[in-house]
Image 1: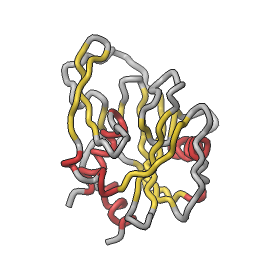
Image 2: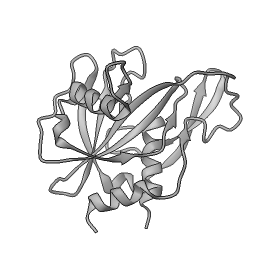
Image 3: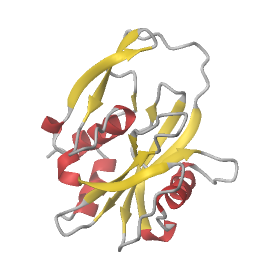
Image 4: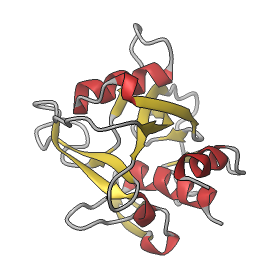
Length: 197
């Protein structure tokens, strides 16, 4: 079975939505909170050493999540048809990935963030090659991580830090100099669970 077929099969596997609160059941969520819709592209491309996942390192000058590792993506704008359109638009803006290069395979379960977003991960196969260019002021770096690395549950660990006066636990899946954690690591862990043999 090739990687595209495996990814498509993962979309139909059991597993529900995730959130930044999965590992923190004691955190009380504010009643009546309104979540903003967002879409991110979990883009997988072929490479000589095997399939890779495209990630970004956010600009250290950003107000929110500076320097963090993230999927290309962002909030759904009024001009976006849906979360898929938002993810593809943001990927074009942030890393210069032409939407026509992406074969959209489907959606992974949504992920709720502590910052009030309901993120829909759009799983896509990137056809051919493209010249990745980080968006000035938004993205410091575009890089790729072997898919095999983030599909291995043993590479994930749970760590914690204090946040707003409480200890918050989260997933991490480091790769070389890149500290992949939080929502990005949680979404990748969900994909790993779905693709487990």
